Image 1 (cartoon, rainbow, N blue to C red):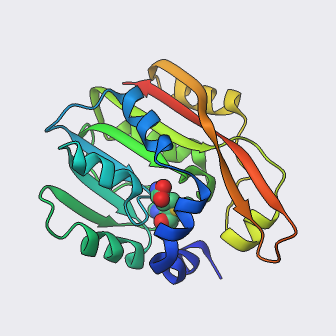
Image 2 (cartoon, helix red, strand yellow):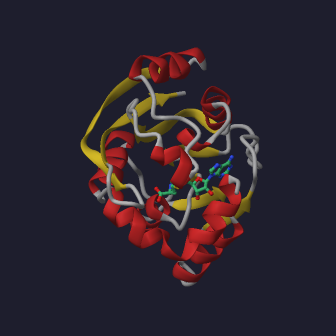
Image 3 (cartoon, rainbow, N blue to C red):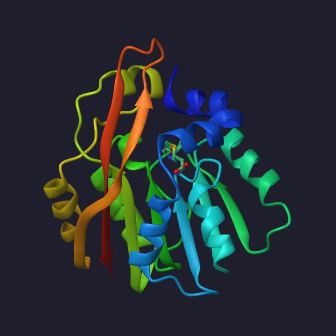
Length: 207
Ligand SMILES: C[S@@+](CC[C@H](N)C(=O)[O-])C[C@H]1O[C@@H](n2cnc3c(N)ncnc32)[C@H](O)[C@@H]1O
Protein backbone atom coordinates (compact mmCIF):
# COMPACT_ATOMS: atom_id res chain seq x y z
CA UNK A 1 0.00 0.00 0.00
CA UNK A 2 1.27 3.50 -0.76
CA UNK A 3 0.80 6.68 1.28
CA UNK A 4 -2.10 7.96 -0.84
CA UNK A 5 -4.01 4.69 -0.48
CA UNK A 6 -3.27 4.62 3.26
CA UNK A 7 -4.64 8.14 3.82
CA UNK A 8 -7.67 7.44 1.63
CA UNK A 9 -8.44 4.38 3.78
CA UNK A 10 -8.07 6.09 7.15
CA UNK A 11 -9.57 9.49 6.19
CA UNK A 12 -12.78 8.74 8.13
CA UNK A 13 -10.84 8.01 11.32
CA UNK A 14 -8.15 10.68 10.95
CA UNK A 15 -9.79 13.28 13.25
CA UNK A 16 -9.87 10.74 16.09
CA UNK A 17 -6.37 9.44 15.40
CA UNK A 18 -4.94 12.96 15.20
CA UNK A 19 -6.51 13.97 18.53
CA UNK A 20 -4.65 11.11 20.19
CA UNK A 21 -1.36 12.01 18.48
CA UNK A 22 -1.15 15.73 19.35
CA UNK A 23 -3.31 18.60 20.61
CA UNK A 24 -4.52 22.00 19.39
CA UNK A 25 -1.47 23.50 21.14
CA UNK A 26 0.47 22.64 17.97
CA UNK A 27 -1.63 24.82 15.71
CA UNK A 28 -1.96 27.55 18.36
CA UNK A 29 1.82 27.77 18.50
CA UNK A 30 2.07 27.81 14.67
CA UNK A 31 -0.56 30.55 14.44
CA UNK A 32 1.00 32.71 17.12
CA UNK A 33 4.40 32.55 15.39
CA UNK A 34 2.79 33.44 12.04
CA UNK A 35 0.97 36.44 13.52
CA UNK A 36 -2.27 35.75 11.65
CA UNK A 37 -4.31 38.62 10.20
CA UNK A 38 -8.00 38.29 9.36
CA UNK A 39 -8.87 38.38 5.65
CA UNK A 40 -5.44 37.18 4.49
CA UNK A 41 -4.89 34.04 2.38
CA UNK A 42 -3.26 30.91 3.82
CA UNK A 43 -2.30 27.61 2.19
CA UNK A 44 -2.59 24.43 4.28
CA UNK A 45 -0.30 21.89 2.61
CA UNK A 46 -0.92 18.20 3.36
CA UNK A 47 -4.14 19.47 4.91
CA UNK A 48 -5.62 16.06 5.74
CA UNK A 49 -9.09 16.46 7.19
CA UNK A 50 -8.40 20.10 8.04
CA UNK A 51 -6.77 20.38 11.47
CA UNK A 52 -4.88 23.56 10.48
CA UNK A 53 -7.55 24.79 8.03
CA UNK A 54 -10.24 24.67 10.70
CA UNK A 55 -8.25 27.03 12.94
CA UNK A 56 -7.57 29.36 10.00
CA UNK A 57 -11.25 29.49 9.06
CA UNK A 58 -12.19 30.34 12.66
CA UNK A 59 -9.66 33.16 12.60
CA UNK A 60 -11.25 34.64 9.45
CA UNK A 61 -8.63 33.71 6.85
CA UNK A 62 -9.22 32.45 3.33
CA UNK A 63 -7.80 28.95 2.92
CA UNK A 64 -6.36 26.90 0.08
CA UNK A 65 -6.24 23.30 1.31
CA UNK A 66 -3.95 20.95 -0.61
CA UNK A 67 -3.77 17.18 -0.22
CA UNK A 68 -3.08 14.04 -2.28
CA UNK A 69 -6.03 12.19 -0.76
CA UNK A 70 -9.49 12.71 -2.23
CA UNK A 71 -11.04 11.06 0.85
CA UNK A 72 -9.31 13.51 3.21
CA UNK A 73 -10.47 16.48 1.11
CA UNK A 74 -14.00 15.00 1.05
CA UNK A 75 -13.95 14.94 4.88
CA UNK A 76 -12.99 18.59 4.86
CA UNK A 77 -15.65 19.59 2.35
CA UNK A 78 -18.29 17.95 4.53
CA UNK A 79 -17.04 19.59 7.74
CA UNK A 80 -16.61 23.06 6.27
CA UNK A 81 -19.53 23.08 3.83
CA UNK A 82 -20.92 26.26 5.33
CA UNK A 83 -17.55 28.06 5.44
CA UNK A 84 -16.81 30.67 2.80
CA UNK A 85 -13.43 31.26 1.22
CA UNK A 86 -12.11 27.68 1.29
CA UNK A 87 -10.62 26.12 -1.86
CA UNK A 88 -9.58 22.50 -2.21
CA UNK A 89 -6.75 21.28 -4.45
CA UNK A 90 -6.02 17.60 -5.04
CA UNK A 91 -2.34 16.92 -5.80
CA UNK A 92 -0.09 13.92 -5.50
CA UNK A 93 3.24 15.64 -5.66
CA UNK A 94 5.37 18.40 -4.20
CA UNK A 95 4.54 20.61 -7.20
CA UNK A 96 1.80 22.84 -5.83
CA UNK A 97 -1.08 23.89 -8.10
CA UNK A 98 -0.84 27.45 -6.79
CA UNK A 99 0.76 30.39 -8.67
CA UNK A 100 3.90 32.21 -7.49
CA UNK A 101 3.44 34.79 -4.71
CA UNK A 102 -0.25 33.97 -4.18
CA UNK A 103 -0.56 33.48 -0.40
CA UNK A 104 0.28 35.37 2.80
CA UNK A 105 0.97 32.24 4.85
CA UNK A 106 1.85 28.61 4.16
CA UNK A 107 1.37 26.00 6.87
CA UNK A 108 2.30 22.31 6.83
CA UNK A 109 1.61 20.21 9.90
CA UNK A 110 2.96 16.63 9.90
CA UNK A 111 3.32 16.76 6.10
CA UNK A 112 7.03 16.93 5.22
CA UNK A 113 7.85 13.57 6.83
CA UNK A 114 5.62 12.02 4.13
CA UNK A 115 7.20 13.57 1.04
CA UNK A 116 10.07 12.25 -1.04
CA UNK A 117 12.08 15.48 -0.84
CA UNK A 118 11.30 17.75 2.13
CA UNK A 119 13.78 20.28 0.76
CA UNK A 120 11.88 20.52 -2.56
CA UNK A 121 8.56 20.69 -0.71
CA UNK A 122 9.86 23.64 1.34
CA UNK A 123 11.06 25.42 -1.82
CA UNK A 124 7.59 25.01 -3.34
CA UNK A 125 5.91 26.45 -0.26
CA UNK A 126 8.25 29.45 -0.39
CA UNK A 127 7.51 29.93 -4.10
CA UNK A 128 3.80 30.45 -3.45
CA UNK A 129 4.40 33.01 -0.64
CA UNK A 130 3.99 36.71 -1.34
CA UNK A 131 6.99 38.88 -0.38
CA UNK A 132 6.70 39.30 3.40
CA UNK A 133 4.67 36.07 3.61
CA UNK A 134 5.38 33.50 6.32
CA UNK A 135 6.09 29.79 6.16
CA UNK A 136 5.39 27.77 9.32
CA UNK A 137 6.07 24.03 9.44
CA UNK A 138 5.38 21.79 12.42
CA UNK A 139 6.72 18.24 12.37
CA UNK A 140 8.59 15.62 14.38
CA UNK A 141 12.17 15.74 15.58
CA UNK A 142 14.43 12.89 14.48
CA UNK A 143 13.37 9.59 16.11
CA UNK A 144 13.95 5.83 16.00
CA UNK A 145 10.44 4.41 15.80
CA UNK A 146 10.44 2.24 12.67
CA UNK A 147 6.83 1.15 13.18
CA UNK A 148 5.74 4.63 12.04
CA UNK A 149 7.15 3.84 8.59
CA UNK A 150 5.51 0.43 8.49
CA UNK A 151 2.15 1.31 9.99
CA UNK A 152 1.66 5.00 9.08
CA UNK A 153 3.59 5.20 5.81
CA UNK A 154 6.00 7.83 7.12
CA UNK A 155 8.94 8.28 4.72
CA UNK A 156 11.20 10.17 7.14
CA UNK A 157 11.88 9.30 10.76
CA UNK A 158 11.58 12.95 11.75
CA UNK A 159 14.23 15.59 11.12
CA UNK A 160 17.31 17.17 12.62
CA UNK A 161 16.48 20.79 13.39
CA UNK A 162 19.75 21.98 11.85
CA UNK A 163 18.73 20.38 8.52
CA UNK A 164 15.35 22.10 8.60
CA UNK A 165 17.04 25.43 9.39
CA UNK A 166 19.46 24.93 6.48
CA UNK A 167 16.61 24.11 4.08
CA UNK A 168 14.68 27.22 5.18
CA UNK A 169 17.71 29.50 4.92
CA UNK A 170 18.65 27.92 1.56
CA UNK A 171 15.44 29.29 0.04
CA UNK A 172 16.36 32.82 1.10
CA UNK A 173 13.79 33.00 3.91
CA UNK A 174 14.64 35.58 6.58
CA UNK A 175 14.11 35.57 10.36
CA UNK A 176 14.31 31.77 10.43
CA UNK A 177 13.47 30.21 13.80
CA UNK A 178 13.40 26.49 14.59
CA UNK A 179 12.11 25.86 18.08
CA UNK A 180 10.16 23.43 20.30
CA UNK A 181 6.40 23.42 20.15
CA UNK A 182 6.50 22.20 23.75
CA UNK A 183 4.53 19.07 22.98
CA UNK A 184 5.22 15.53 21.76
CA UNK A 185 3.54 13.41 19.14
CA UNK A 186 2.37 10.25 20.92
CA UNK A 187 1.63 7.09 18.95
CA UNK A 188 1.13 3.49 20.03
CA UNK A 189 2.16 0.64 17.70
CA UNK A 190 -0.68 -1.59 16.50
CA UNK A 191 0.42 -4.58 18.62
CA UNK A 192 0.77 -2.25 21.62
CA UNK A 193 4.37 -3.12 22.43
CA UNK A 194 5.87 0.23 21.37
CA UNK A 195 4.88 3.71 22.45
CA UNK A 196 6.44 6.61 20.59
CA UNK A 197 6.65 10.02 22.23
CA UNK A 198 8.44 12.34 19.80
CA UNK A 199 9.03 16.05 20.41
CA UNK A 200 7.53 18.40 17.83
CA UNK A 201 9.41 21.35 16.33
CA UNK A 202 8.07 24.52 14.75
CA UNK A 203 10.08 26.11 11.96
CA UNK A 204 9.22 29.55 10.62
CA UNK A 205 10.61 32.09 8.21
CA UNK A 206 9.60 35.21 6.30
CA UNK A 207 9.99 35.73 2.54
C1 LIG B 1 -0.09 12.97 8.89
S1 LIG B 1 -1.31 13.65 7.83
C2 LIG B 1 -1.44 15.31 8.49
C3 LIG B 1 -2.76 15.95 8.09
C4 LIG B 1 -3.01 17.34 8.69
N1 LIG B 1 -2.00 18.29 8.28
C5 LIG B 1 -3.10 17.26 10.21
O1 LIG B 1 -2.28 17.90 10.88
O2 LIG B 1 -4.00 16.60 10.71
C6 LIG B 1 -0.37 13.91 6.32
C7 LIG B 1 -1.22 14.39 5.14
O3 LIG B 1 -0.34 14.74 4.07
C8 LIG B 1 -0.87 14.24 2.86
N2 LIG B 1 0.24 14.01 1.94
C9 LIG B 1 1.28 13.15 2.09
N3 LIG B 1 2.10 13.22 1.03
C10 LIG B 1 1.58 14.15 0.18
C11 LIG B 1 1.99 14.67 -1.08
N4 LIG B 1 3.08 14.25 -1.69
N5 LIG B 1 1.20 15.62 -1.66
C12 LIG B 1 0.08 16.05 -1.02
N6 LIG B 1 -0.36 15.60 0.17
C13 LIG B 1 0.39 14.66 0.77
C14 LIG B 1 -1.60 12.97 3.25
O4 LIG B 1 -2.58 12.59 2.31
C15 LIG B 1 -2.18 13.35 4.61
O5 LIG B 1 -3.47 13.87 4.50
